[in-house]
Length: 354
Image (tube, rainbow, N blue to C red; front, side, top):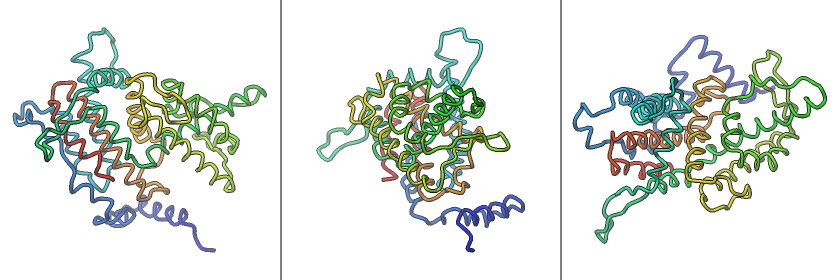
């Protein structure tokens, strides 16, 4: 019997992890000359005029940015982790320097929420991009530039959100039934915080998914804790795997429509966001912060070492880095570390993966 692709990848993983060989590891990735890396030749670095004075560079954030740059373009997943270290430093500094409250603790959620408030206040600010052929100045608002990123985002970005939302909803439905029957529920400690955040912060879009594709997804599942009690098994049979993927893709498409059409409503989900702030909160928490948590907390396989990694995974990880790079820059703009027009490179970066 011939070995499946999964079995071959597992055997390779076993060889590398028990006797690491860099060349063998590199062979599991796309070759350096692959077209998926072509975007990097046109990548636009943040280069604020203020930073001509080296004393004005945000030292801690800059040190992590250098690490991020060194991992591009072949490991955008790891570059994102270093980028987030710079982002973490920046949103904490923003909170500490501008928030007037008396909180005794500094948390990621509190600092991110504060950064979102500050960025929301500036969404209408217009960035000068350069001169058009008729010598008028081309420009774009911060909000429209953020929309640019999502208009052309890879499908896999939306599938990521759809997947953790559907799985969380399925567990909720399972537990409700089990509780009613007096049986053992899936322990709350096993439900990813990413889903809990999604459910609590975005009740409208969560409810819309739950009533539509969520119920259908749940019916394909046979949920239980794994035998070692460290994870959840969704028990989707091979015969139903195609239907499950179709539901993830359909949900992802509706999330795309909800995000890109705001403030209009073209998604069958109906109104998903009640304000610019709620929309921006979704972009940061549901995409960037969820990706950060998945990677840092070790709740999933390393993105590009996963058994299911492919070229689309690489492109999605690259997009994640590029959008995260914009978020970091917007925080720096709110800090006064960079000027408005220093954000212009991100408009070009938003089109690099087209």
